[in-house]
Image 1: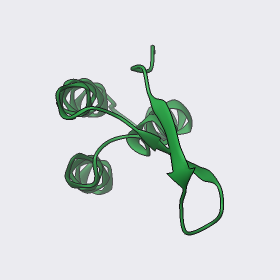
Image 2: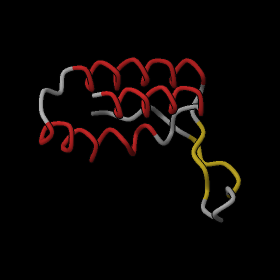
Image 3: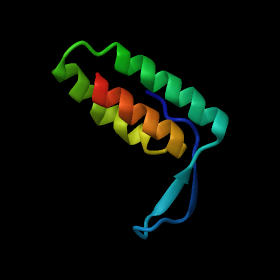
Image 4: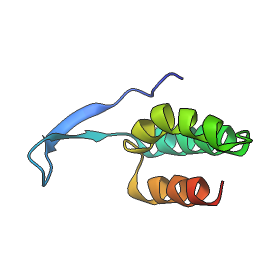
Length: 75
């Protein structure tokens, strides 16, 4: 999985730099992650996806990240 280009912004509440992604890139990554989630057939594959997919989810815009969270919970 290739991650979209992100920029480092000012530190967030936890003191670590936050990542910023553009709206079009967030939507594109959201659709990719949703498609990958839909293809997972069992718990082991879902866990394997989570190890790669959830860190990518964390660079999405908040609304898109929530959509991935919901899709993951219902998978």
